[in-house]
Amino acid sequence: MPPNPNPRIIVALDVSTQEDALALVSHLDPRLCRVKVGQELFTRIGPRVVEALQNRGFSIFLDLKFHDIPNTVAGACRAAAALEVWMVNVHASGGRRMMEAAREAVEASTARPLLTAVTVLTSLDAEDLAAIGLGGSPETHVINLARLAELAGLDGVICSPQELDGLKGRVSDDFLRVTPGIRSADSAKVDQKRVMSPLQAIGLGAHYLVIGRPITAAPDPAEALNAIAAGIEAKGS
Ligand code: C5P
Image 1: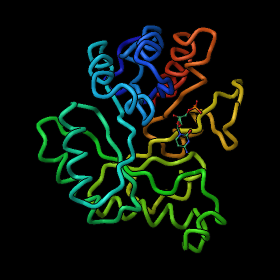
Image 2: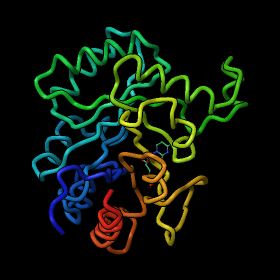
Image 3: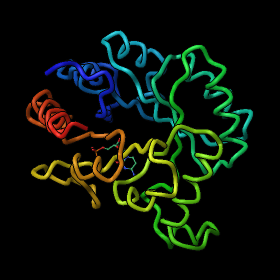
């Protein structure tokens, strides 16, 4: 398969040691995927895990979901940009000024990462939102926060596949949708309740797919990645 200059698959490295992270990626082709470093791995190991993965050819989505006052989040985004990561994210509920400060910080960096926002955590339902004083449905908040993120000049949002349809026409088509909760038609759902196949999600407007266990827990992770990547390529996506 020819190398894809913009792989859409982001493999979630949900492990807690650098050894495990490197063992996992040793099966993966950086021309077919990027990798996501989240709060646990980064908090345990720190920037050196990012560097080690970059040295193996991977571009990194640093999934730390910053949420603080604008000045503090701007500093955190500057620090992430200095690591030359491909993507970094914040919580849209930090507000427009916070997101603008984050955007200005990455824009001023020499290697500008993509900047995306989490809208509403998919672990929260309407009852949870009411308990923190937010009436209305999660879907309404997702759309409002996605629009706010676009107004603040961010590059996109992280959203569940179920939210893709609601975003159509509410934000521009090229505003990035980064989507976890992906399962191939034949893979086990594990603890993900609302899932979608890679091609369904792309059909609904997803630009990037965050995929963990369907690749990382597969008997042959390289084969699982290749199969998903080939399916996407075959669709000409
Ligand atoms: O193994 P799995 O494919 O379920 O992993 C998905 C990744 O996306 C994990 O890192 C998980 O934390 C993240 N995620 C998610 N659902 C969300 C937000 C993030 O599964 N709503």
